[in-house]
Amino acid sequence: MAYIPKNRIQSNLYTAGGEYYIPGSNPDYVGYYHKLYTGKIFTGKTPSDKPNLVLLPIELYNLSEENNPTRVEVLNNFENLVYSDLKNTDNSTSVYSPQLDFPQPTKDNYKLGEFQRFFCKKRNEFSYLEISKDSYDKLVQQDPTIYFLNWEPFNIPWTLTGEREKVYIINRNIVLLTEKNKKFHGFSNYLQKEYLKYYFSTKIEENLETNGTEFENQRTGKPYIGKYHIHPEKGPMVGAKHIKKYHDYLIPINKTPLPNIQTNTRSSSGY
Figure 1 (cartoon, rainbow, N blue to C red):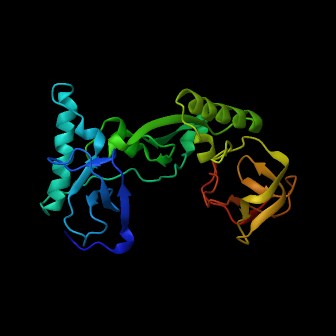
Figure 2: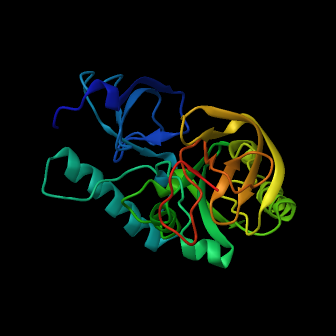
């Protein structure tokens, strides 16, 4: 195998069983293993701790041709991808784990008033990850290029526009309903209860207040504490009320600016 930097390897991991197996051999592996940045897992504390045998999710071991021939075909494809990579054969496809991805609502999404957010939950754990639609589709389709058996995909509609209080309630309710119906404990905490994330006002909202954790001044780059208002075209701005004198814009701390529906650019201050 090609050289892989140490910072791209999770070393000295240990399993007491019930998680992985060695294809064609041990149905339940117990011992040390390491994990590559691609999501592939091998025996041994590190790549230099030989032998480095492939480990696959234990769920795959229980699939039988009589019970589910379609998934056995998926299993074979899954294992072939791993083995071909080990042998350095010419195969451009690799198996990977879902990666964190932050959605970016489009202007069309804001005109519609909502968009879909995609997530996956790690099986047997209350661990969540927001992912791209492409990763979501691959998990749903059980694409053999992704570790689909380790993750359960799901999506929720997310309201973007409307009255601020109603948007907050709608998004909160859909999160709590998902948490309850699917028994996804801690999902609301994963989202940090940010039910107004990506929210865009369609009218001027005034006399709002922030504690410094939501926005930073676009001109100074410093967190903003105090009164602010939201303009339907210009977004969040400094000051309790909108005035015709120049005043600074605010941008979310996460660096994702609220979109300007009618214009593509803006300076650091406006009126």
